[in-house]
Image 1 (cartoon, helix red, strand yellow):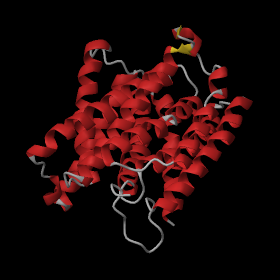
Image 2: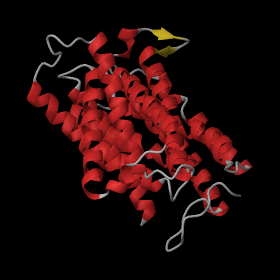
Image 3: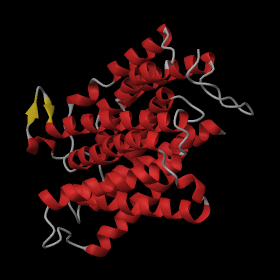
Length: 314
């Protein structure tokens, strides 16, 4: 059942890429990021204040990792992602985000001493090879922003978003594991802080007079849908899942997200994906299976009716 919840989370999360593209038809990237995060943060913290007031407290030890979480996982990750999304298809942007397992594996090894076996390394290598075909084709309008070392700037922006996002998830896990902060509190506070950062940046580079929104009702309609699916449902489900699965496994399970994103992209934007996309997904799925089976053997993944394991051991 828990494994089904993992894939349900990524199915819903995949819609956020297409929803974000829709929101940016009516407003610029930083304004979309900041508005979405501030509103979501206020909603989550208001709920906690009304029904779980004791969990809203933040200690001195939690302040620095919370600020770093806000900066990396909320402000930088979403600013890079939304800028790149203007020029990439939702599925390709989501696919680039799937680089996260390689970063998560390295960070989890150093932060939590998670064991990396030969089988895990094989799975990571197979998965990395699987990324090659997807960079052979262009999608959307990425050619408009130029290239650097063979990659478009839109692709580079998504890679930067991936780096900062994975670092944020490691910080979130650290806040819960080492500092005792609930994932919901950490998510709500970091969304509010990171959202304010994005709005300040938006005011400087995107302007405030006149407000750079072409259709206010449509803008807030798509913002609300992003908040509902990504901020309220998926962020908090992911935080809960991090207590039961390793960051490495969840990142690899997220490799299914591009498939779901391609479906959402087709339904909302009539986007299609060429054959290299599906070739890459097949190879990466093999890598996912290798990592999953090894983490199950090592006891990192919680089995049905069992208590969560200490993921820092082994």
